Image 1: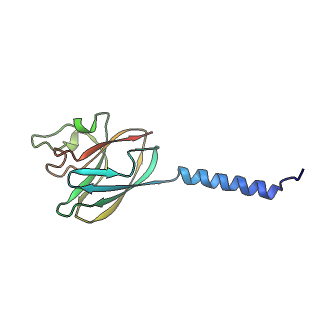
Image 2: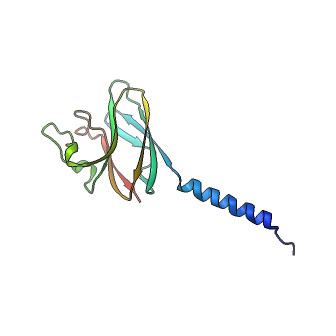
Length: 137
């Protein structure tokens, strides 16, 4: 039987470690904001660094992208008299404000395991259903 050389074994081990490190690295999630909808490429991810690549696909209005950590369902966040989320009563991880039509921006955050809400809190947008639940494992 032919023996595998130590160089081949070392190369295979190095290749497997490289794949493992890439899998543990930062993740990119594409997010499209449209008229009263948020559409991420995934709605669940592993804990760690993530970059949301946000595109305002609406043609006629600015949006914002807010990441909130909360045990509450996306539809149950505390709102003010106008129906907008009271951001002082929730844990805002980070946000991109006033993203104009056709604009693109990245938002990099480190997310621990838990439940999050992705939303737009421009006046009237949360009330129109521009939010969704997001899970980090």
